[in-house]
Image 1 (spheres, rainbow, N blue to C red):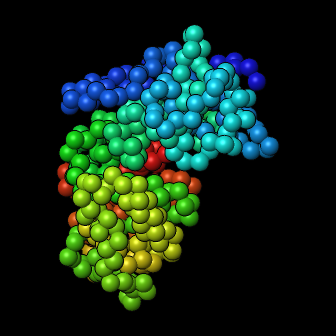
Image 2 (cartoon, helix red, strand yellow):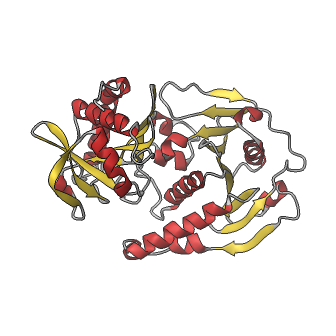
Image 3 (cartoon, one colour):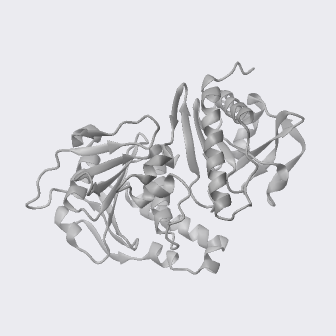
Length: 378
């Protein structure tokens, strides 16, 4: 297939370039210099255009799922480098896709003699590397690597055909913005050193990935008030299980070991997997598992939640106040009621269709605030 030009690539490229430049300046002000070379507007447009046309290809009846990283071949100590770089063409990418579709593998793309070429594949890329991920035909996620190689990448924009959704990072400065959302929206130097916020993000990603839908409640440590919002008896009430807590207590040296990363990944997936059971999973702020399969109800003496503030961190999105049934099904309604009754808690809800909502009480608004963040988790 010969590219005829993807209009969304031309529209979004200047915005992406400005986003990367702003983050590069922020990183330099904090004294970090080891970052990836930044693509110009023309290169960003070409990469997005290439990824879009590649997404429409088929190889043995399957659509490609690939990640393109704009990085030179010498930037990774663990890259697989082809003896001769390949021409960056949609058909060539589709043929390569089966070999590199596992999570964490990027095709390295760089300019040679003015043309984009694929030099090989790598799992390790420098901070602020620009990445275009092909999720499915016509669906692209544009993002950059954060400082920690194992953190969720920072989403810049999501392109679905002719629809462009650019992440609005200014949402991080709004009053009552949950730390989880603040961290997803950019480089947050105030993130706790224990990794607690990042673990919630990993749980959110894992919940969304299992595709069954689910609810995760995060309640204050040492408090049993959340049980007042649960139907009794609770079928799967457990003694506080500290698998995640113990891992997060490891020192800095232990955290650098590959096996620690693997253990953390498995522990996150284990907790997130429990959310697929009908009912909510409950952890506390120390990430101890307390229960799963919890049926939620209105706390005795509490009013029924009537209104919820709804926002999404997307440029052009307008905040709205809606009735809870407009948010989704039973999971969303029960999560909104739970946070209305348990105002020190947050609720994270994954839908089977890929939507993801974080519910938190907003003292400024005097309402439950529903934050739609699925674009930040892709």
